[in-house]
Length: 257
Image 1 (cartoon, rainbow, N blue to C red):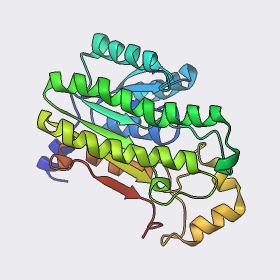
Image 2: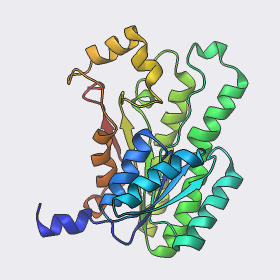
Image 3: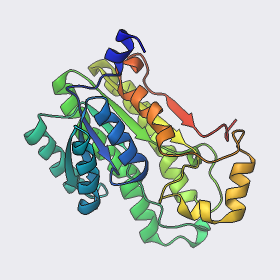
Image 4: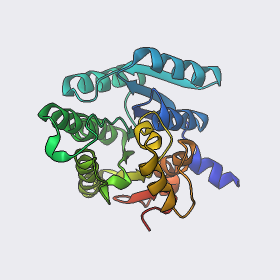
């Protein structure tokens, strides 16, 4: 890697807020951003788990600020970004990654609480985080928002209609904000992962017919690992993507080809 590439991937001096950072894809992205110089704000409902991720980052020489926050609650999101402003000066990068999927089964049987919770976390939470982050980024002259969607948004699987519709809305949110925020130097992009081995996807991996069907239709013949989403996130957050906005980067082993 040449000197110019190292500079472009360098996130030194940047403050990156990563939601859902206590485990899986979020924790992996946070560690990678830290390794490339960013100060990372770790966000999740689980304070103890955040502390463990923060300790690992700081043990490797990075800087992390863990903030317990339920991103399904707009008031808690407002407090989160006030904390980031007071402690670190503002936000340069936002990775909206926190998600929930409490109902796995026929949409006709979904209880109303499951619909409300999924929309609150997967869509309203993303929107409100984008509002606060964008306000800070405007003050700082620009920034990058990366929304984690899903290939479920592109091809909704049975039993995941509510989850899929929120993730499809995330793509619309991404493209709409890209148009609105581009003049302010703020890029907004999305990642659509396929089946990635995390606690969140455990029900899919442990349901053999579903696992076999997905893997059987994936050209690479396997599921992914959280580390394999990092490259997309790092690219979209960094200066290498300085002319990229409103895009959806699919990382799924070829499943949606």
